[in-house]
Length: 262
Image (cartoon, rainbow, N blue to C red; front, side, top):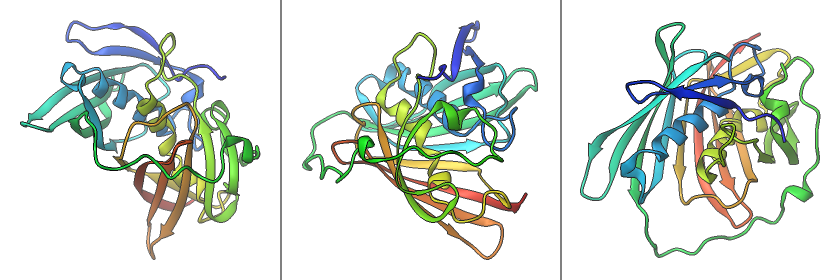
């Protein structure tokens, strides 16, 4: 497995945690900017570590990317925004101390942990062993795309149309076991790459946000994105995916994409 995305570097007086970003988090568009997956995972980690989250599960997670997230030291913090009788809303933030600005934030609705009326499943007809390894585009920078293990069941980054891929991300933070939800969140941001709608050598498609509705916590390290991208007539696209683990559906995601010529 590749190097974890982040290395812990202490806690500040205000409770914020400091992390050093490793090269594993670098995105495909520029070596100094992170892929959206590692920030999503770190924001999820902060939410899950809130004391109020102890007996709750995330039902909806929305990340806002407020600008390029640098491959640089970051501060992570979280707080509860609204306490309800059954559900609560919480927020987490990633701050770039060198620039003095927030670079990403997330809001999540947390639901009580309990037993519901539905069964888990149905299980997908394929698993990671049924997928194949495919090379990433030569125009993309290494980092995240090489740190994550990919097993393609259908499609590819340079094949136009929907795609299905199993993914396994490295640990989020060095010295820690990543929670199943945080590991999944480091992968879900890749839906726009799994479902290629444009020639990646000619077009860029960067998302400004990520919204994930979570049915249940995933099981195991591998998750599968069954993804599709729809383009508008202007600069807006939408990438969606159904997320599976080996047992069945886990979540559904959507991303608003900025589509521009490279």
